[in-house]
Length: 414
Image 1: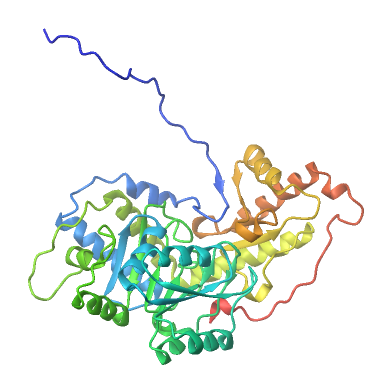
Image 2: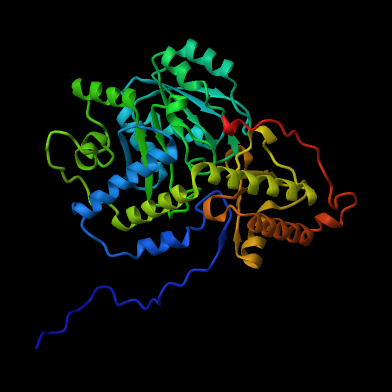
């Protein structure tokens, strides 16, 4: 008989995990589409299996459609949106490069931190959180600082503001500067046209308007970005991040015309790739224009319902994201208690503000599978109940207070 083994750590007694069923209406993740959950249960194959590599090629084709780009280097990155973001920074930044960063929210500051770790000199062009930059402001900064990279959040998740993009690519080309864009909260939910806008490098996340769980992220480089990678490699520069080295990933995920076999790099997240493929297939079935219109219609309904219960949005109408709305917390209301009230009484998740907007706004998402009018109406009803619990609607003059807003052309359609 085998002698008994003395264990240093005793066997734990932990039951099967049974998470609560939340309606995820915060800034992300949102609830994944049921078909995406089902795809994750499909049988796994190996990461070098031809069936998986074929699925990866289909993901790349679908991503090009979602982003409206013909970039050959368009890949699913193993990791969340921040991994794809860091991949863009790590592969396109040489020590001493200047990054001009459009900072009008929390994630602009995050780019400053990230790029500085790869040796970039950071120049901030700043605006109050929730405002956007004019073409003239960006053009003047490009001319003054002559950066190697301009970083912009097309959709600033901390503020709910949408940055106009139509002319930035041309301005960057005039100054021999790469344009890097964050589309984490815009891909699939509002017009994103990378080739038309002249975006050189872009990343996104799957967990928002694509209705995929977090864990795999889209990344794309255009010809100018790839040329920068080649120039760095020719100078003997090594990407200071092994896992996210796109020169190595190219050998794994990019088909070549020379018969060179693919080279193993890392074990790709097989089930997450299935999930992203299904999410993008659902988007293609609906059609980009239809998805954009659905998100817009749900958002405008939500904004109108917010007005009816006396709540005001932080971002002006013409620059609001249809995927993510920042709602001002009324004076005298404890915003944190409202977040808790919705979670405990309605199983609804919303979030508070970040950075400068902490304690000042709620961030409420209408993204992907969750972008439906019935969800918007439910959130508004829950908000009214939560505010009433704090006495807001018993104060004189506050019941169904209305506020005028400006309804002009939406810059996100540019």
